Amino acid sequence: MGDFRSGGFKDRDSNSGGGPRRFDGPREMHKATCGDCGKECEVPFKPKEGRPVYCRDCYQKHRPERS
Image 1 (spheres, rainbow, N blue to C red):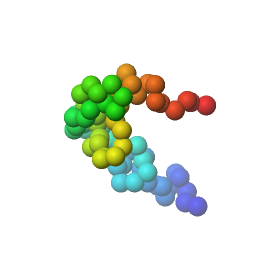
Image 2: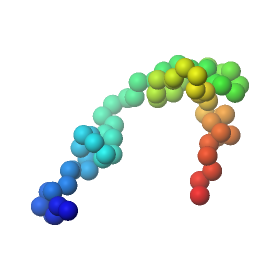
Image 3: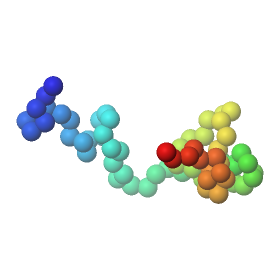
Image 4: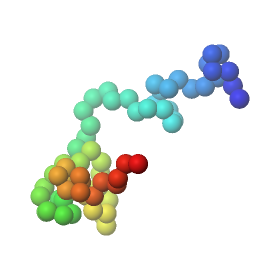
């Protein structure tokens, strides 16, 4: 394995792989219709056909339990 102090590992702030994502500006929001209540909402990802999208309120009901 590389030596962490010598810079053998990628800088964690770089956005060129597994590091954290940089938030340099506003995210592009996409309009969607909630799969539960039918309310129009906006989400920070492009919805895929055949996969439900939930509004903020309904998402709380579908969110996986944290262990």
